Image (tube, rainbow, N blue to C red; front, side):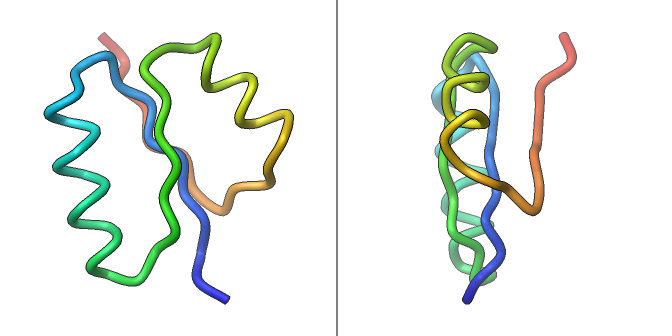
Length: 55
């Protein structure tokens, strides 16, 4: 089973770029545009990795 990752970023282009890149590397990707969405996803799913935008 592939590793599962969550990408959290408010910029849709960044989420899409990271998602496409990591999917090509074999990861299963979910995305969130803000921390509210991220918390919902984290409550529903166990992730191996989480990529976040700090600013």
